[in-house]
Structure formats: C-alpha cells, structure tokens
Length: 84
Image 1 (cartoon, rainbow, N blue to C red):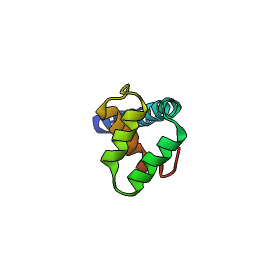
Image 2: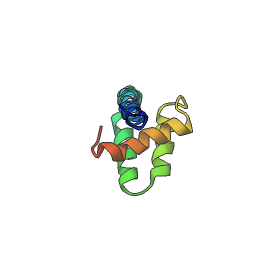
Image 3: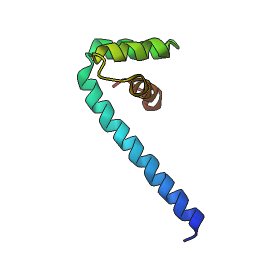
C-alpha cells in the first residue's frame, strides 16, 4: 500500500470518527434543548436565519454551549436533512 493510499484511508477513518462523535454530541444536546426550541431553531435555519438559530441553541443550553459548538450543532441540521 502506497503512502498516499494509507493517508487517504486514514483521512476517511478520521472523517467517519468525527461524524460518529458529532452524532453522539447531537444526541446529548437534544436532551438539553426542549423540543419546541429545537423546532424553532430548525425553522430559523430553513428561513436562512442561521445566526439566530445558533443564538437560540446557546440560550436553550443555558450558556453551557460555546459559540463554536452551537454553530457546529446548527450546521449539522443541514447535513441530516431532517428534524431531530
């Protein structure tokens, strides 16, 4: 196996691991956010108001979620393509 092939295989495994971790984090975060707020955040993203959705998610977690983490959570709404 060439160096490039090993590198690409490692990269794919790393990306898969990150996706799996993201899913576990999402499962936990959904328990912190009431369903109505979660639906509101999804609707805001659908309306193109992602910044406001991030703000709602941060407020819903009582400040336990930083800006970066809230943004990543909201960004995954689009990846999943469905409501949690």
